[in-house]
Amino acid sequence: MTDVLGRADDGGISGALGTYRARDGSAGAAVEIDLDGPHAALVVGKRGYGKSYTLGVLVEELAAAAGVSPVVVDPMGAFRTFADVPGFSVVDEPRVSAGALSPRAWCALLGLDHESSAGSLVWQAAAKTDTLAAMKEYVGNADAVQATRRTARNHLALADSWGVFSPDGLTAADCLSGATATILDCSGYDAAPMNAVVRAVVEDLYRARVTDSVATLPWLVVDEAHAFFDGIAAPALRTVLTRGRRPGVSFVAATQRPAALPEDAVSQADILVAHRLTSQADREALARARPTYMHGPFTDRMPEKPGSALVVDDATESVHAVQIRTRRVEHGGGSPSASALTSETGEENESPRPFESVKCVR
Image (cartoon, rainbow, N blue to C red; front, side):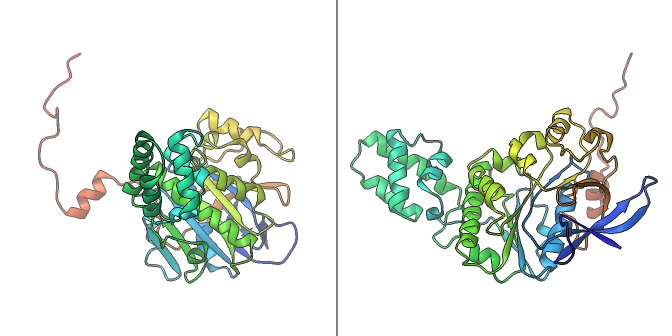
């Protein structure tokens, strides 16, 4: 007997998540997660307790399912291990078209008030051109005072220095055709350029489904989601979160810090996978969104061990203790250790450690 979380009826596509965890820690019946219909899911957990590992399990299942395509935003490089796996495309330092961002998004990205002289000029440049080079040329030739042109030009030069804008940047069609799964490795970017990429890609994914220009159903999987809800990607993520069900765009947000997410990112989730949390603020963030069918607080059922999770399922209005299954693709989200680095080089550090010979006198 296998239960499918996220689905109240029988039938449809699902993927293996793990097994039920008995009170004595032993494995019970198999647990799967619904991949057939659109979902808004949230995966939380402090560092080292399985958040990114669980995302990898979900991505493996999505890649193996027909009719759906995961698009993974990877800000930490945790999914690089998928690069050599058939059916996966890892895009290192992804680039997008400047025209994929709206004039309002450009002003927000550059920290310019759209009603200021420089902000208004950037707005016009973004509205009337579709490449960064053309935007810079427009600003340089604009009928504006020199100080305004200089300010706008300097801000656009900063954006150019990030290296994320290209006339042939990624589109929804690129992400949803060819490879079974697309992973956007943004680990080489700072917050602003990373947010620019996500804003452009997510808005294009949503538009593509609204206009039925792509045949597959996208699952947007965002690790460290708080970093994007705090930047210019936030409006695009909120659109998918609150309006993605009808066009068939699923959204999976993962974070170590649920307290840093907007309240609707927690309350809108119809599937919650909670690994261990110890921060009072993070526990309270989940407690505020506790469904009425959940008896008792989250703190009473919070998992203690890595790989264990509490799964809250709105479709069946149930709460389950689950042990996440073993990954098929090597997990890339672990932390390095000094001993492992030493063994890899085959060398031992024979130099004296700092303060090695200093004795503590009490």
